[in-house]
Image (tube, rainbow, N blue to C red; front, side):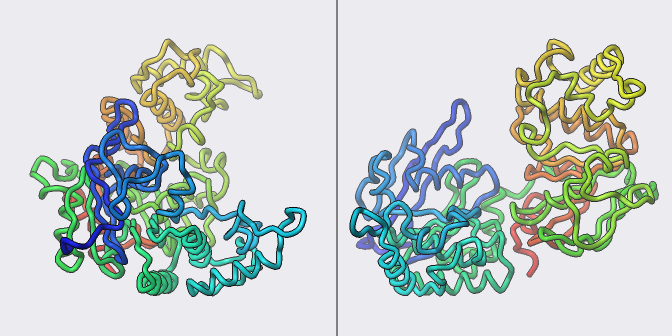
Length: 503
């Protein structure tokens, strides 16, 4: 791939990183040549973030080594040395919104004058010179919060270059950009490459790899799979490298003995539009499980949360059992017949200071008493039934939910969603961060809901979750771009998610 006398700008070999019993990276490898844009791709959990953390000095590897220009990486404690080597521009900006561009560029290293006071004139001059050097067309005196996303990214890149770094990691840089902004970003990247800047480009949208990168490295299951010139790797070969070998027969998607066609339409959404998604039509019938798939910036989670009352769309309508579904009101959605397992059980799903019983019955307190009083016996009885139904390993309803394992805590969240006997069950990352046994138990509850005639909408990054669906809709930049019936193969769904099989 490179001539023998070309010293890699960055090289990582045999990187192993463990977090307790979890092996986040078992064999991380990367070789980036000076002046190229090098793509790092892989599905969620492949090890990309862990490798980036090692490459940027945020984490020390348990095994392996990182070298810059042939020299060993600096000590982890030498942050200034790392800043001179590498910088990462994350999907979420790290600039301080209320400060000006100039202040962000030289934060904690502002030029000073007499009395060690900041020299604002010199600060503005240095910022203007830096921006001009790297052809970044931004007003140094503008507040950063007033900039477009793409301009904030360029400010972060300029700040990194000002330390002397010539290796920039771009982590999902296009997630919040439209097509025109993406093309402008790519134009700027190419110009910076011509000036000697090297990029590591991380994206879930594989067509972007072919547009802007010269080389690609694939990680899968925490291991290096391949590194190849982009021009020599077909899109089908790239997807296969990410997904693994062609799926065997027993790995085909879930196939039902009878489908839901002809059963009542429970959810009917038309033209739903917001900042995160646009013009979405979606239906779910009773006894049907519909999956939503897509990358982190696809809008799939925001769409699902809309049906649970967490967001108000700017356009479109949705009906549940023929009645208008209330938006932006969680309690109203619950009364309308929506049950929800939210995306984060810690932040959104559980009240840590309450018991298992309190958490499990929170959505049905109005059924457990009269005139605003809750019957303790009734609550204990309902909680006990839910604990038995979900197989929650607990000392009883009075145990603190904070004492439960991750899998059992997630079962409590599922119990609360099912307690209200919902007509529509919205599941967002329902098996995230749980053990294999708990995962199968949670998915079995989803199957039971289907058999009971409940309409189920499930959002997940896990293929095993989506395999249980009757059909899967794929969102890409907020638009539904594909629908896969049960029986899809891994590489087919991944190709849609990564933007390979559509424009």
